[in-house]
Length: 341
Image 1: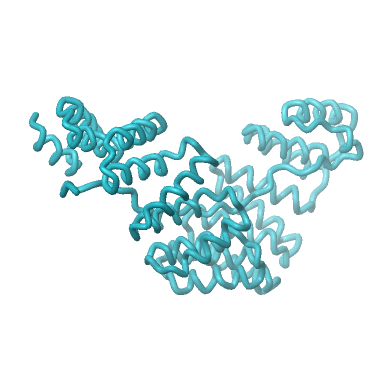
Image 2: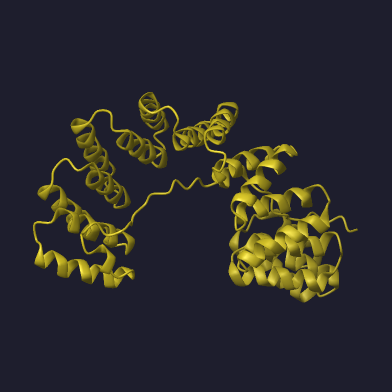
């Protein structure tokens, strides 16, 4: 085995993205919903026609706002939802969706203001507190997020999503112990909350704690297409030199998403370091670069594979390409020094 430093991809906890689902579309609220089209563009045209027939039907404007949000027409969605509210004040779902639309449009203050309108109508509205917490969380206003989560839990204690969001905020604040406690509370309340198992798995696997395997496997059992959990398992087995298992999980990731550049890179890394199969390593690194041309680790490791294979010119070209992306990238600098400028 050679002694060159290699650039394997370590799973970073900081790259976890918590996706709190926001439902932007549901069944059309008009009496003719059974006859409504399912294609968003067709549904929009259908709703426009219905609005011409029933211009005072607030629900139609609300439905149109949902579809416009789905289509990415955020400004038009805002206007449609405002029309719905002007026709039927006090309908909380109109305000909640308008808050989402304002947030998507970057109007955070308007979003908060709209939610305060909901709370003015009903100070016990859990959905409004949760939406404020969500917006504050994404805006990195963590104190405000926690405050709103606490208010929601005072009203409704057994809310898995609230504990899940609290866990995320604690993670962002660096309090892992509280994060774990909140995430465990989530799955105590909802044994099928797949995202909570995933995050707990990532937390423990990041410490190389085998308990993470149990959490990740549960997440996968709940969602077999969870590529984050599958990739984390693959990386765990790779780090612990269980190469057959690592390859199996990387290939499962690629079965679900053939364009997963990290899985392709790491399979190349395995071929390079454990099997010394340079041609196959080059093939994997090349596939990773087809997906992500600026993947500097793949560029550098492919150059190293060429170097070890004896293709000095190709190695030199690869190291130079990597250094164009980052002139101070040490593995590429060392590689270029070895093969000569």
